[in-house]
Length: 478
Ligand SMILES: *Cc1c(COP(=O)(O)O)cnc(C)c1O
Image 1 (tube, rainbow, N blue to C red):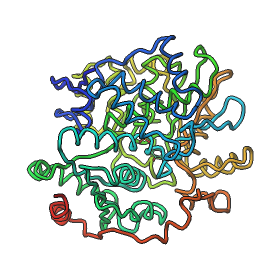
Image 2 (spheres, rainbow, N blue to C red):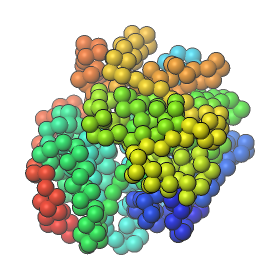
Image 3 (tube, rainbow, N blue to C red):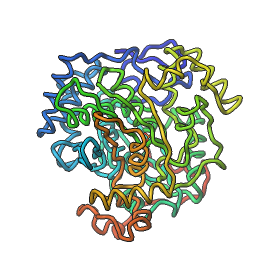
Image 4 (spheres, helix red, strand yellow):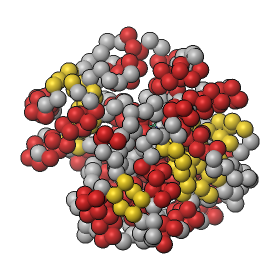
């Protein structure tokens, strides 16, 4: 399998070459040259591999799917990496992603029982093991630099802690994460994890990451890399749980299932698109957004309009607070018939000129709902509170704010006879303040997280100054 860029760069690369890279050299995103097809016999084999959540079943399923896309890691090694990653000890159950029934035909798929209680662990835990493996093979090192407002940073740190050849330098806005999120990151004592709290907001952190990454000499000398959501390996890891969700919701491979996905950067739901393109019988892929409705607007109108920071709302589902959806280009590349020149004209030329593009008159867009199954909807703070209350009263289940956006939108798109699976993207304890607002009580806290706010913390506080951050990295990366 070779990988191409959505903007047409001539090189075709293999999996391990793009594993440690971010964007393609032309600014595009990497995608496989084609989606491997899973036919009826293949689907039956994958169902048997998962074995309805038997111990080791998820790792076996992950290996089967990953090996369709990865041909530069020996099969025995890839299988061992999957087995080391997807364990009951790390994810809390043999099924890894158990389906929770709310009512007939309506389910939550639990993706949030990993070390940091959000779905990002599903991919990041694999990435940690893949990075360690590949860097070891090359005898190389990597210094990961990132900015986080919460979920991504802690998932990355918990995946990379103690890994050979990798260091993490994670910037976060000083005093702006919840005490729980701060504890998740700052209590890590592993010497390869560096928390840097910046006196500023998230955008200041991101600006510093950009400034450092734009200094190509510094970047090369200090082997700076990233783990953001455009990484193809992260997306690929997420494809696996669409299969696992499908197998749990159905008895036979002739049945269809719809998924609703709380979305921000379009990484999670893009993995669903890939699964559907491979032949998994997905009926609808429903994109749920919060007040930051860039994606809902596109699927309703055909207009993709990037927001400025003044138009980006701070909401109670903060991990979906985005101004543009960084993985969206992958879907549009497929939508326009994999025409890289067209994709570049939209994402490079039109977005930098007008901040928007309009596909409403395009035959591909008009047919997108039926060809690709996409539907969408939006949820607000009031919807979130009402949904958390309703799901708690009706089913006795407390859901987090992002999952609530998913449930709210999923209910608008159910169709008779087709099971609807909502991806549960975080546990409520991460967003306790809003749960208290909705229910008047604190959400349940998994035992392993009792009292984490009181643990000793390891964090450097710095001014919003790229030079100071660079000096810190240079002093701690060798
Ligand atoms: C990251 C995140 C999302 C958004 O996922 P995307 O892949 O960016 O669309 C939704 N919910 C939670 C809890 C997250 O951490």
